[in-house]
Structure formats: C-alpha cells, structure tokens
Image 1 (tube, rainbow, N blue to C red):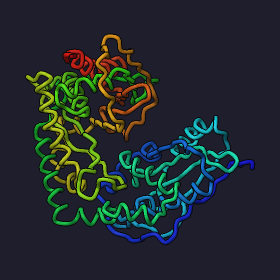
Image 2 (cartoon, rainbow, N blue to C red; image 1 turned 90 degrees about the horizontal axis):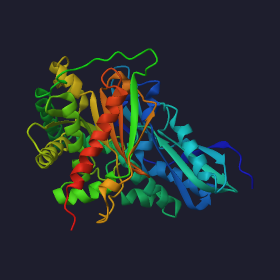
Image 3 (tube, helix red, strand yellow; image 1 turned 30 degrees about the horizontal axis):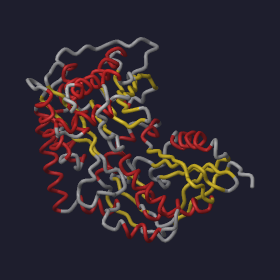
Image 4 (cartoon, rainbow, N blue to C red; image 1 turned 90 degrees about the vertical axis):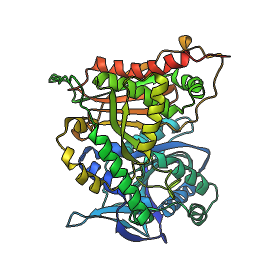
Length: 452
C-alpha cells in the first residue's frame, strides 16, 4: 500500500472544557513570545523518535487523539481580551494536524527529523488553535517515526518525558481515560491557576518576590564594560556550541568526591568563569527552574518552568567553598521561581535603570540535561580524553534583550555547553574562551580527585 504525503486530522471529543485566568507560566511565556513575533516559533517545543516495532497509522492517530484528551494544556487557547487581560480556554472537542510523509525503515529517522524541523518552524495561533501539531513517517501503512511540536504556552522541555510516556501507553493499549485517571494528582492548567490564587499559592508568590528584591539590591554590572561595534556583516548575536566528550565522565568522578550534584558543579564552574569575565566577584543571572517539585506538579504539563534570580558571590572562595555557595544560592533560587510575574515587574520597577539589575536580568542559564550520569570509570584518564569540538550556529536575538544565554544539554557525543552572546559584549574569541573555561574548570577539578 503506497503512502502519499498528506495532512490528516487528529480528533478529540468528550474531554473536559472550561475557562479561567491564566497560570503564572502561561502569562510569562505568552508575553515573552509576543515580543519575539514573528520569530516566536523558535520557542516551540519539538520532540521526535522511532516507533519500534512499527504500528498501524490508525493506531498512532488514535493514540495522538488520546494524548489530546489526557492533557488539557494541548487543548488550551490563551486569549487576550479587549481590556488586555489574558484568559485560558480549554476546549472539549476539536482537532490538530497530522502530517503524513512516505518513507522506509531505512529513511524514517532522517525524514522524521526533517519533519520535526518543518513543524517546528511555524508559529502557533495562541488564541485560535490547539497548541500541538504532529507528524509521522509511514511505509505500507505502518508508522516508523513520529514527531510532535508543541507551543511553549502548552509545554516546556521538562514536560516532554511525561507526554512521550503517555503516548507510548496510549499506543500500546491503554485508554485515554485510564491514562488520565492514573495522573489525577497532577494539576491541569485550570487547576494550577486556582492553586496559585489560593492562600498557599499567594504565600509562595510573596516569598519568591522577596527573594527577587534581595537579589536585585546586590546586583553588579560588569566592572570594565567594553561596548564593541560589530561590523556591517556581523550578526547582532552569535551562538557557539561546545560538545565535550570528557565532561560526563569528569562529572561522574568529581561529584561523589565533592558531594555535589552535576547541576551544582556545572553551575559553580559557570559562576566562576562569568564572574571572572565581569570582574565583579559575583555571578548574577536568570536561572531556569522547572518547578515540578511543587505539590501537584511532579508530572504536570503546561509551561511550568520560570526564571529565578540567582546570585553567587565568588570572591575569596576556592572551588570547594564555591560549591557550597552555589548549592545554597541555587536552592534559594529554586524556591523563588514560581510567582506572579505581573506583580513582580511592578515591584522591580524601581530597578528599571539600575545597570547591575539590567545586566543580570539579561543573562540566562538553562540546564536542560535529562540523561542519567554515567557510572564512574576508574580507568578514565582526563589527559587522554578526546578534545571538545566547537561550532557556530545561527542565533535568535531573544527579542534583543539578552547579554548572554548559556544552555547545558545532552548530546550523543558528550555534554553540550552552548552560548548565545550579544556581539556588542563578546567577540567570537571571547565566547570560545568562556565555553572552554567552564569545561576546563570541571576537568581540572576532576583530574585532582584521587583514584583508588
């Protein structure tokens, strides 16, 4: 049976409906995306993977419909009223696009990645359509690869594992009702908004905003700022990707020795490197926090990740002391990244022209790694580890409002450190020096760990 390239519809009926105020996360990401239009698609949340063994197209189509039923966030439209107020509308019935591409078992992975990129590269209508689109690669009626792209108003990267787990369950016989009931303790967006407006939610919000005010009061701008003048052919932002084959094993050796987690070690190395660059003895930045440690959010979907204000004092600290400071500062930040952003911006208005606050709020750090760390290898030799590779890719300007953005991510060849940098602040050589400096700090600390 020959497969033709076509667009089908994935339908959902009989689901829960309702309307209400938006969640803190929906409010924050909707406003951020509006500043990026027409480039807001860059924050779409994509995922793809093989279907093994291959399954009939109709089975996958029904499973995707079940996914829409289970997760209200995918059926939620964010609408701005005439008064500027945002509200969320959860539809009981409707559909989403399913893009079908012909392929073979041998070409499915390559075609699936291309299809994912195609679906990713278009903005969503946040008020007028469901916030999901799907794609499949099919041979003789069997799906070999599936791709999905979600609007950032409906999902974040930390919610993808739950979505994919549910899709697998739905594809292998579980009913939508069973999957939804099994996750009854996880708050859907309307429930999240109600909880945020409860007495408990208001206490969390107030405490978070106190932390932000304290962090802002100590902000420092770079000591000797140099404003570069990019040439006519230079992009306003550059993005470098360093992939280190050595870092996963370095973290596996170092972390048990210093009794710290990989996120803490990477963040401490980053703080040291960026504070030295700034010449301030402090690293202040916006730390992305997934917020799923809060009650009812462990496996919830929706845009739950928000930024917290991290401030680490690096002066006079060796790396062991810095790890302790980083752990304390990051824990305080994790607890303070779940808040009403509208109220926060009002409280931070007095700092609107403060050079330190303006700079530190333009600096971002996002650790997106999800892979389990490897087991320590006693035979691992840091000196013999393969060298890191570095390449440059096109960069989004993030709305023209960032100094730098650092991402940590899993890659097949190792651990990736990526940096998007304002060309007025960082030369290409400086970006490379900073990325390699973060890696070098971790490798040097790991090399100093005694091996039994």
